[in-house]
Image (cartoon, rainbow, N blue to C red; front, side):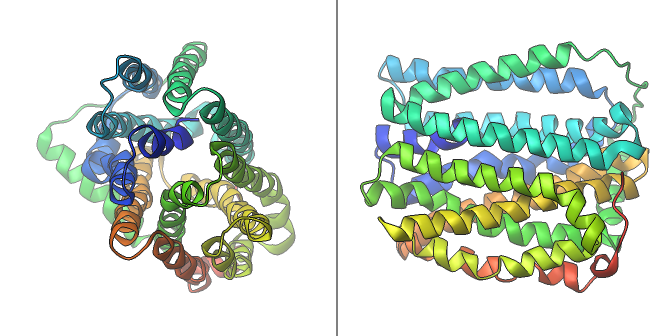
Length: 380
């Protein structure tokens, strides 16, 4: 809900410019660039579940401040900047800890199945959250939708408190060891024949997606479409992710886990053009179909690539590998948000959509020219 309600709060409640919307998107993911690598090294040294709970509670507080400030008539774009930046720091630690904790929680032999279920559940909540978020924006307001989003983080913390499986004891080291550990994680990712193309392909995909979805709310508002329309549009993306996650392991068994990555990427190559041409009427339906196919690829990637990443990485490097990947992949989102804002402000809001279309046409290339092209096995 907050993913949709935050930019709509900026556009509808604060009359933000395209450049300000782009900066908001950049700040929401910039924490991965600022602290992503140290966060991975720190995460390897602490217990993961308490860290995730603390991150949830902090996000509940900062997101909850938005509707409060709105009710008091003191909400500004600068507060939104601060909220997304602080929440982004919390998300860095939560995401790295969650992906690093999963192999311990379920065992390496069940990573493929576990990731498929997590991505599927995430897609279901994306469909519901963005659909409900768009409806709430229309019925009550965008700030109110952010308030409900804050409550969901409290719910997340409660569920995490119910996980009883004990964690292994963490290790501790000094500042010099922290720098050494960060370097070891970066070298491992970019020196690995499987992890390197995964990072490059994911960067291309994330950059393209962020270019489009940063400016799409602005385009929809200028087309005179209600908040519910953008909510449904992004909910269609959730449906694509859901279908991709449900199909990933079956496609991998039939086509080969590496081959399906570049084949699906090649299949969605032309779809960005339809998103760039979004308009009222039939063009809206065509763009939504294209977005469905793009996010189908995201669902497939999230199951297969994350499983590969966790399977080829030893336990002691999991936090740093995940942090390095998050640094690169979510850093691409930050760059995409900034680039979208610049293009929207100085060239035109659709220029960002066309830049995304070009990148969507190239997402299959890093996987094709790598050992993943012929890889057969997917972790169970």
